[in-house]
Amino acid sequence: MSKFVQKLVKLMKRLEIALIVLTVAAAFFSAGYFTGRSVGGDVQVTVEKAEEDRTLPEAEDGDRVNINTATSWQLMELPGVGEVLAGRIVEYRERHGAFRYISEIMNVQGVRETIYNGIKNKITV
Figure 1: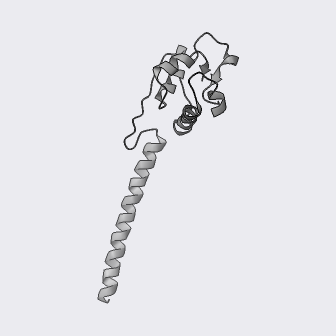
Figure 2 (figure 1 turned 135 degrees about the vertical axis):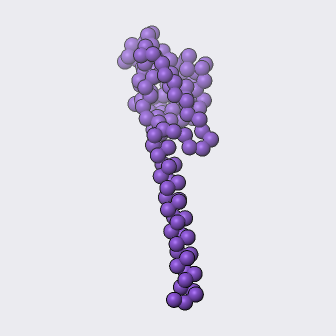
Figure 3 (figure 1 turned 90 degrees about the horizontal axis):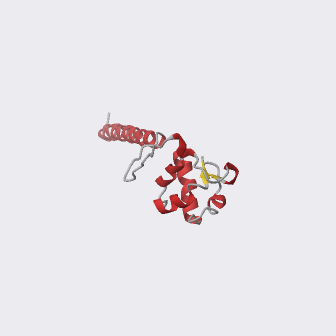
């Protein structure tokens, strides 16, 4: 075998190893993404609340906005929720799945306690 062919074979083996390492890294990254674990600098907080937190009294269920099915336009009808925040709520729901409790909406960037207190009696899951 010529020197050139030997070097080529060594290079191909290195490339194969690098490809395997990248594949394994991608698999770990994807597993973290699909299990809801954050990969990178983001921090995901899960808020567990009592069953009563699913729907609070004050409005009839028909008057409430279901944050699991509402469109951006429907979310913008809530006090303090504009176009950007409504988009973040929809994006969060698509990335993390359905909200189990209404208080989980506070995990969305931009939904602070003030906004939550203004909408908690107008939303449901």
